[in-house]
Amino acid sequence: MFKNYYWHGNRGEKTVYLTFDDGPTPLVTDYVINLLSQYGFKATFFCIGDKVNRYPETYRLLKNENHQIGNHTYHHLNAWTTKKNRYLDNIDECSKVVETKLFRPPYGRITSAVTQRLIKKGYKIVLWDVLSGDFDQSRTSESCLKNLKKNTRNGSIIVFHDSDKSFEKLKVILPEYLAFLKEKGWNSKSISQPKSI
Image (cartoon, rainbow, N blue to C red; front, side, top):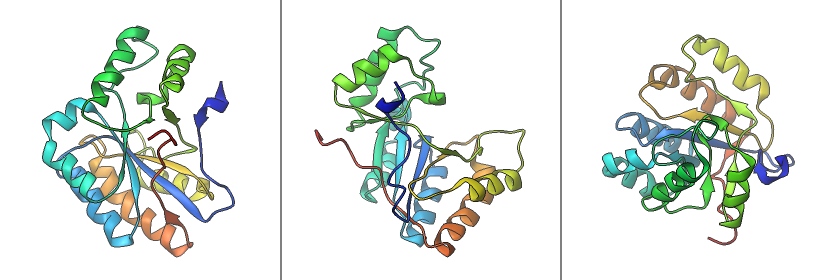
């Protein structure tokens, strides 16, 4: 089943893939976009459909900056605790406002039945190989940053969150991490859509 997921990009290229989950969030997403722009980096934002409807201006800004967009369900559902059909319907509901065939399951939790259905619909299921920890209230910003620097490799997909919950930590971690990437010669690109898009 693991071969059905996109865990990382090309290990031979000096490129990483910054990703942001749980937005769009006013102020937070704006902050991230501005910071990425300073470094000339592109990223992929896995958006919650309900928040896209609530904050259309923030979502529009995200699209106007030519970052890639992904589906993160309409209500941030957990596939392990949600009935399959309800979960798939929630993805479909999100797809009405987020036009994409990139999907990341909230919490990184997905079932084989959902995976098979999404693949038939042409989705690329994006996971990651480096987790920033910005959402974890028990961790310090310093430990998150140390972990990021230690585990980043060519092709890494790195997860951050453009959410209110993560903002305080993100403001500490992200500027330093982007400076680290630049110093080490890494570029950040958006994750490409499947060929069917």
